[in-house]
Image 1 (cartoon, rainbow, N blue to C red):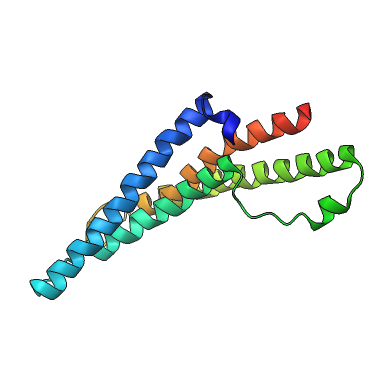
Image 2 (tube, one colour):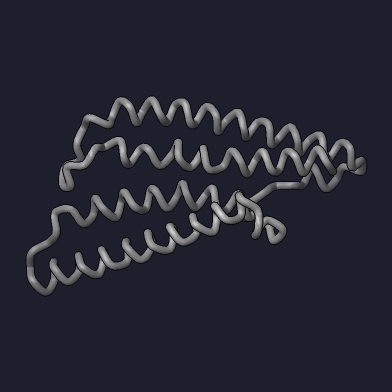
Length: 158
């Protein structure tokens, strides 16, 4: 949303955009490195696929928060467009946003439980905590919550 560029939320998501760019470049570099080692040196990297997988999972959940911030998630608004009352449309939008908040709060709680259960496990190749992979989900949920609060306040204000 263009009006959010100078808000604190806008600034946070600009930083997140930069992080996503760095992560995408890292995956690209890792894949090039993997190809070079596998096909030129004939010595595949044992950790390459695991690193790419972990970064891609993080890109997915952080990217979902960024898409929500920008209003880029797909929506199905067949019912809403048929409603004539702006008040009913706003009430339906508010209900939808509150359901999303509930889902994200549950996601943070359940995701954190999984992180706690897997943190002491080690990944096969990189030997890092397996919970790092699963941490992406609750972090993504946490990043989406202030965006939904913003959207709820906008909906209430009309």
